[in-house]
Amino acid sequence: MKNNYNKLLNLLKNSIVPATGCTEPVAVAYAVARASEELAGKDPISIEVQVDSNIYKNGLMVTIPGTRERGLLAAAAFGFLFGRTERGLRVIEGLRKKDIQKARDLLARNKISVTLNPDFQGIHIEVLLTAESDKVRVITRGSHLNIISVEKTDRYGEFKSNPTAALMDNTVPKESIREYSLADFFEFSNKIAISELGFLNEGVQMNLAIAKEGMKIGSGVGQALVKLVREGLISDNMVTYAQILCAAASEARMGGSSLPVMSTAGSGNHGITAFLTNCAVAEKQNLSNDQLLRSLALTNLITLFIKSYTGTLSAMCGCGVAAGIGASAGVVYLLDGTQEQIMGTLYNMVGSITGMVCDGAKEGCAYKLALASGWAVQSAFLALKGAIIHNTDGVISPEFEQLFQNLGYLCDPGMIGTDRAILDVMLGKVNRQ
Picture 1: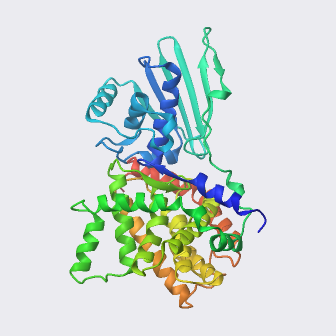
Picture 2: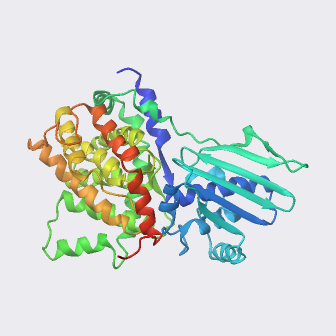
Picture 3: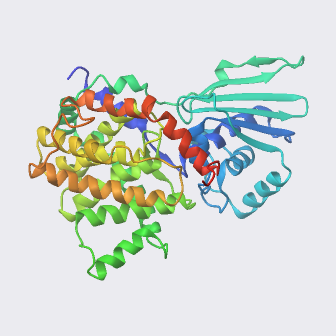
């Protein structure tokens, strides 16, 4: 291995963190909260927020945790009134009824605006907060909590930067994970002291808890799948159980659950897919917790590797075309597969579900997680049985790194136009012929 185990361990720990609510509106709430902290409780004249297309798309229809409010306007209001940046991705956790009403009152005053800036590339949020004679500008770029600039006007009305005021997150540069190969990830997962992976247990328990909550949704896809099993219409097996857990957890999260999830690579739904797909197989197979933790290490490392090429947000659904792929590798690992069989399931996944689009965060993401997790398990079993897509078919490459370089190229520049088209459809800009 090119570097020691500690570096990979730190990559995991920095990229697997708790989050409450969808991370795109949370990112807006976080940036607004940071601006609010500079003005020490002053009443706002205006809160102007500009965001990139993917933040806008993913924040358009999703519910704010613990409320029935949707979208980025609500996120900005909660961030201004109640955001605490020291909580990170849990910045607006613990909202009460009176807090929700206070945010509604602020929204009713029409002091908040959120606009899409088509010139912004990648994750990009700019907040301009005006209160009395003061103005604060906060810029987030690159990742959800990566505030790169905090500026405040002086007595002459000129913006002055305060570099020490920026709250840089702990996101590891994407190039760091690219130093490693599949062999490195496999060796790490096999040989790292199991005590070092104990932190992953929190993710297992956290994501199982929200899946349990999701099962209470009467019309939810998770509960519907359980009914189908009881009626004998689908089998009670690892595939179905993975779908039930992932779909239920996602539906609860997207529907406004106040429970946190363990995210990976900046996404709670990625974390749900990565953790609960492996959990389902481990439980059905009566495998040890040690085996589960090692599989989760591999799953998350591969997911991070993929995301370094596809980007934090893109036109493709990362729950399938990142976390789902990583989870499939973890399933092969759980079932004592070889490194070659792990490559086989990577080929199967890339050669089949590549292109599944992301059309924003909402309760319907549960269906995509059901598809991704179920196919991840099936793909793993196919690879274990020797059924593997030829490694030069279509966009597939025999080499681990090139395989995901290809996938990244399909996302950007390949699907930039697709992303714009998805947003046009969501905004009702497509006229009937």
